[in-house]
Image (cartoon, rainbow, N blue to C red; front, side, top):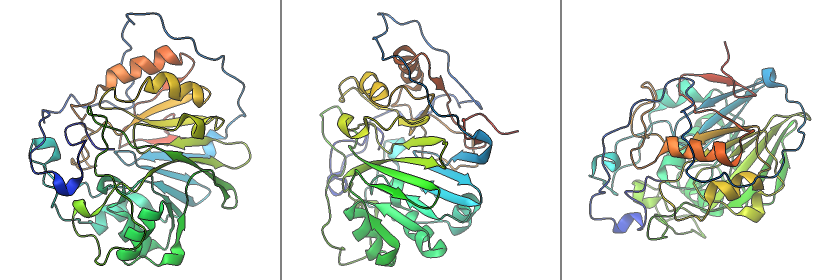
Length: 339
C-alpha cells in the first residue's frame, strides 16, 4: 500500500508531485494505544466472539519492521513478512515524488533486523514491500513466497528460481511446525477508486529492476502464520483492501490490519473484522512515514487518520485489544511487550 497522495496512476506515468502535506503527526509512543473517540452513531452489531485455542505467548516473539513488515521468531526459526528496511528517499512524503528513484539496499541495516530467516512472505511487488527482498533472499537462502509477478522480478534480480514458491491464494503450507495459509487479497485504492502502479508479469523482465517504477503491484496476497498446534495465529496484510470471501474462516488470534488512506473500500473495518471472527488483538500497520529510518521513533503518515481507525476498530469489535506497534519493542505472542 502507498500513501493516498500517490495512489491512482502507474508509477512510470507519475509526472506531477504528490499533494498531501508532509508535516508528520506527533510520534506514537510505545506501546501506544490512542484514546477512542465517542461514536456519533451506535456501534454496528458484531458477531459474538467464539472461544479460541490458548496461545503459548512466551514461545513466540514479534517485531514490527515498519510499513507492513514483521519479523516472527519461534524456536530459533524466523519468518519475515514484507521486510522493507532500507527505507530510502523518494520524495513521496515531501510533495516531490520521483518515480525514477533508484532501488537501493543497505546490507548492514538489513542484517541488523532480519536474523537468519527461513521464510520471506511478500504481499505484493511495490518497492515499499519488495525492495530489500532480492538481497535478503540471495544473502540468506531464505525461501520466498509471493505472486507470479514477484517471482519474475526476483528471478530478474538474480534470485534462484528454485528458491521461490509462487502462491495464488488458498494454499495451506506446512513448514514443519509453521503453517502458512495464503489468501487472495486486494491492493488499496485512491479517491478515484484506482490502483497505484498496477500490472502483472508473465515472464522475467529483460533487465533487472533498477528503479521503483520497475516494480508493478502484480496482484496482492495476505498471509496467516500459525505457530505450532496451539498458536498463536497471525494474519498479515500489506494493503488496505481485502477479499471478504477469501479471509472468512481464518480466525486469527492477532490481525495486522493496514490502515486505509481513504474511504474507497466500502465498510472496510466493519466487514473485515467480522470476516476474521473478531481477532483477540488488532494491530494497525502501514500508517508510518516509511522514508524515515527505523532508528527513529515511528512518524505518522499525515494522509492517514490512525486515531479514527483505532476508534472504529473498538466500535466494531469491543472485545479486541488494539496495539499500536513501535519499532523499538519486541512483543510476545500475545502482542504484549517483552520485558
